[in-house]
Image (cartoon, rainbow, N blue to C red; front, side, top):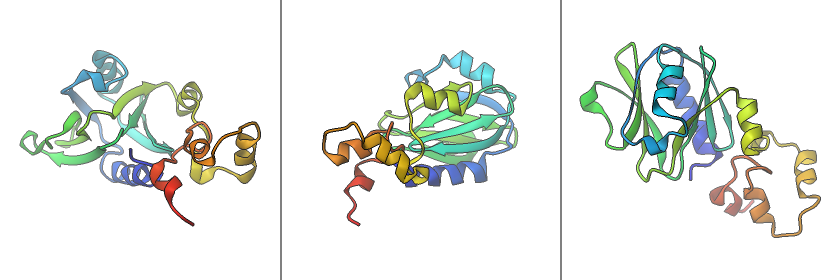
Length: 176
């Protein structure tokens, strides 16, 4: 599953390719990868622009010029690819956002563990799913408070997204 550093890379890629682009269409080859109804996604996003992004742990939030925020979770093999022309559509681009400049942003999802959702705000979604402060911004005091009532091994606690959003096997297994 992509962890904090990979999703940070996806954020940079999204920002450099898709920000300020007007969304003209959405195509979804497998609607099971959407947490909201496809028609609801289309209604909320078509005609809007992506105005900014925010990453919290393994989640990428794309704020729009409308009332909704696009939530991207990459699962185990998710990725993004910006491309031009339908003939260039990547093989595993199961969700595609088309822009008025003729380019597309494909949400690649080979194993179909990733998904897209809509939220009213980043904060409301963070609270709804019990997502902590991003691990890169977590203070020592916040981390200590998360540990205060736990009696278990440290690795599962660190990997708990309500404790340190963005931490997974790769980062928790690294030796310092």
